[in-house]
Image 1: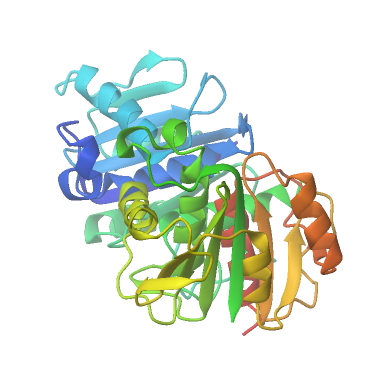
Image 2: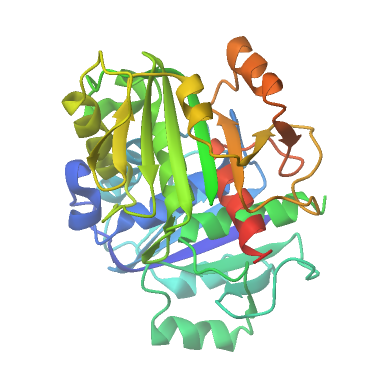
Length: 193
Length: 193
């Protein structure tokens, strides 16, 4: 099982955003949604062995998308935004337990701690510029990759990742968008099968 | 210089599509726009050494985005769709010459032949499943990568690529979305610098 945890520092957890101005009204949820596509979708297929967590820190809330039981996910940003918006609007903001609303799709009104409790022994990695290269690194197939948004990680997240001894890895010499990082890490794992 | 040519078999060249239903109304222009982001944008930056051509075969028309002189490009799909829609609507459909409307942004009411005439001696590669791996391949930095959309390539495009002896390469064992392919090829080139 591969897990991708994308931490959105400014991402709104309310679901109260406009589909016509996603970057401006959602605290850059668009960055996180593009990671969902890169992590879960292949050409005409869905990766059954991948779980994506979106940590919406302006809340906080966590959206969990589990490829194993997901039914149908469209790749375009607006469809993904609509999907996540519905999940957020239907969820009780006071409920810190994870509630699955549809197969593979659910929300917890909780933060990174909840994600850490859900990782089930996966080896934690944190994507960091300048860290040892993920290529040629003995990446564990049972892995959890923590990825920052356009702002990187906040200090509290860095502390939490240090506590669990998340191993820093990088994907090359250029600072890339989060979804490109997900695509490159996925490709690296695909090649090891 | 790196060039990415994305061929959209069903992509509409008219600009007459709805931003609220991009996949359904534009003939899957969304697939092509995601390649623009992956090819041109880095984290808080723009790749100056990249040119992207979108071949809209339901026309045909070619949109050319040249990183060297581009001013500002937002990464989200709706912003990219708005940008391309304006270019298409402003362009004379009878003009088969390339007309630059803004720095780095222009349209020609022409097809793949026009793109081939604009490649300036770049080494042509075609992304194909099952072809030799781009990794470990002596990729030329002065290169032109031809990438299909969600339907792959049509027969006429295959013939044209065979005529110019485009070299088949692949990016691994899984059939991926076009934008993920662009991200992985870009990463491969970045690592060779």
